[in-house]
Length: 102
Image 1 (cartoon, rainbow, N blue to C red):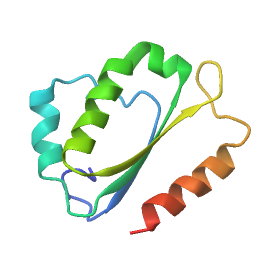
Image 2: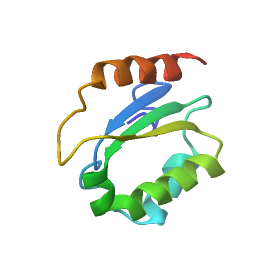
Image 3: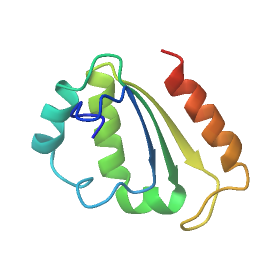
């Protein structure tokens, strides 16, 4: 929703695989990213488990963000399977600080 500007948000936080739309092709994502609100920033957290299953989709989206100069911090969590790392509270604080910098 942050990409479409519907919510007026200028930042986003994404944890994990991303849901059913995440594996959609470039033709779905490119218009959204190209028309994202100015100054949009985000943080994406992924575990090794998530990356095993969707690394191609993650890398494609990160390339699009880079191409359209959307600042995104990517963090690979040091956990097994689904869940949160013991330091996720600090990771979340760091992520919020990043998106609030602008």
